[in-house]
View 1 (cartoon, helix red, strand yellow):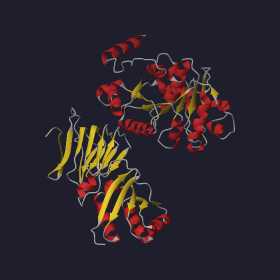
View 2 (cartoon, chains in turn orange, green):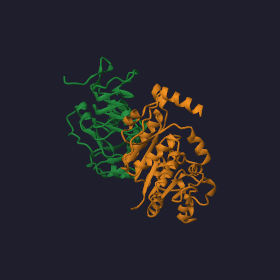
View 3 (tube, chains in turn red, cyan):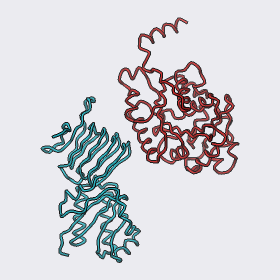
View 4 (cartoon, chains in turn yellow, cyan):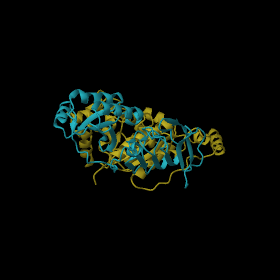
Length: 266
Length: 230
């Protein structure tokens, strides 16, 4: 079966696209699948850092497009998982160095040898976005439970629907249960109602994500993280498994207090 | 030319088709200017084809029309005319000539006699999906949406607007000045609601249980009332 291209996009910047790409790529590879994560954010590449692979890059996507190397040579093998590769973006060029048809070509070449190609889209709805979604079989929209992020997600969904791209899945990232409880944050059901697309994951806010990203260790590799578990669940849902959504709005204040006392006692 | 000036506006797939008939060219342009002024927000950003009939027009005539339209941010892209002189001039100005206007998306009722309101609201645009942020529908007649109109989306109609869903975006009914135009939705909570020259916002208070509502102009202001059988 040819590999599937899944593009991660959002419209708004800073909602966690690259984090989601890195973690979803790793999570799929942990399911023993052959995975390529492809950074389409040319000129502002970050995916390599989050994967901890920056210092292994020799060639990049633009080198492949412009014929300076073969596709295989540009792919950076992950240092942890043998079947995970990164196809990095160029840092010294911009979005115009690649066209949507280039992306389709490259993804088609990758399909033969991989199970999943996870494409990290840049923010915005311009050329970079058009490149990122050109080859997509499925699209994951990442949003935060904030009105601006949801509005931009809605715009992007509209553009994708107009091009008949899909299926489109929704990931709500950086949900803070206590803020939702106080009514300061949109709750997940409000976001789903506003966007009216299929939910595939809810990622709780997790401070360890930042540290993990800085160390180049996607959070999904750590066993005791709620966020990591949420990414593993997204991978399994993408594979067609039915995984129930963990109750997020719990635990209550009292339970958290008990947990706090316990952990301090250890 | 003895007949009175007649300006009619229709929706075609490529934008709007404006038909100019009767009177002199200057009189036609004057009436077009008046239409543009009244419906400025409707026309803004649109593209227009002019059906000028069998008039022999020179380049400065067409340029005058183009300039007039561009002051309302409307692009003139095509000329429809059986007159060879006119089409030659138009082609030389880089305009499309006598394109296929048969491709109408919506049924446009046959032109009726001098009944301006009837004429403007003829033709219904049916949108069978949800309009998301950034998507817009501009139409000279009525607009029906089977779906929601999200925040950031825009519906501008010469006639009524009916939304079988929730309406959260910006809506303008009666964009040519028809104060009798109405806006109906199952959940009427638009960012902004305009009817003819009136503007209203949804109340700022927290969301109540949505009921179908209809907005209309009553004694010079927009009022929303429950939408039910009269």
